Image (cartoon, rainbow, N blue to C red):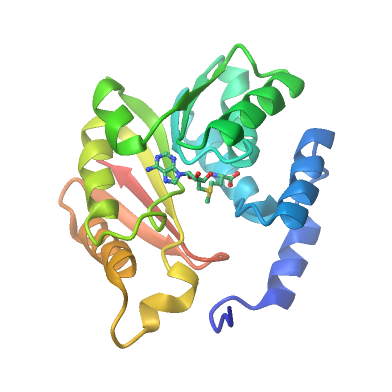
Length: 216
Ligand SMILES: C[S@@+](CC[C@H](N)C(=O)[O-])C[C@H]1O[C@@H](n2cnc3c(N)ncnc32)[C@H](O)[C@@H]1O
């Protein structure tokens, strides 16, 4: 898909600045490229790591595990504080592969992969979480999907905690004259968190756009 927002030469420059990764992360980058798994990649992974680390997050929730790539960055951020990562994935094969990857990286005891639909699992999670990473807002076709996730995540976010949503630009489709339903949902999510009285929000124009919100 043509992408008029992200400058790929700049992306490559930024990727060259990311510190050397573990063998598991490197393998998952290659696996994603070969198998077309939409992972966040090293630059955004490093951003997630730094946001969680500087926020002193201990309780992390991730929506959209895939192979565990971004979850590994988050696990590395909370490990020094003996934190925990809970990550949700509805695809059984991916959930099992991710569990194996967390174990290989030495995080089996601190990462829980829950198999299921985030909309159904989230109500059963008490929280609060210091850091919530939503990497599936664009996944469904309905226009209210991103907003339903927002309504479920916000009460579970601790005061001072960060809520991060990927794909704020929806592959540039937010610029369409008549965006499709899920893109309208992402646009409405971003508008709401930018104007929410309990949140402080910025959209970082990295990759496909990263919305970072802090709960007051
Ligand atoms: C963009 S990928 C996640 C990539 C991962 N965060 C990374 O960067 O390593 C989104 C994942 O969410 C899963 N997914 C989509 N809709 C879901 C839902 N409603 N509940 C749980 N998982 C879902 C997909 O199967 C897919 O593996």
